[in-house]
Length: 276
Image (cartoon, rainbow, N blue to C red; front, top):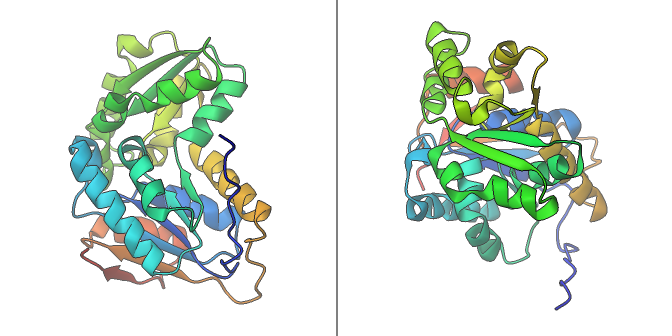
């Protein structure tokens, strides 16, 4: 059956882009979108009350992701970015079904998997939450495009709590990273995918561990570029001269989220409590 062509003519380019994650990790993707698409309005939802998603059941993750998507649609978003690997791996189909073609949905796994599959990579490692690794979505997505790539996935559950607690550039994080990256599963990899949106916050420390031996994939750049192409294709890029607006909603306001969001988006931003 021929795939139905999406029609987004009912949308306006000045509507905001909706981005959601379980916590601070999605801010790295929101920051990349802000830098690549500086005129776009953004609405961010961080489900800090329910993090980490990677330790939750599939049913719970589907519940969180669909509630947040409904909220972003109510806020009149013209696109929804699932800036969470666990939510993508467990709830992408349900989010797409809920959206029902009204707005584009961009996830953080498929654009990355496709890019890696079409470049020269033989042995690919993925570090991610338990929920993402258990879904096997990275392996399936990469091998759907290129069945010759070997993909090894490793669950690294201690990294998200460490990041959310603010242990960046800290001996605790160094020890956790060393312990995970020295695992035999990742022994022969030449490329590493950071399969959790929190992990790019540790990019420097991860690169320091590998030196130049392993290429670490820039997932935020790939996802932001995919979003840009989709908006461009449907004439939805905002070219308004008005200053962009950034709205942040959290299910629980935390000091670490406040610190990182203000670092990325400026000290004047306001965080709003929103319990769905």
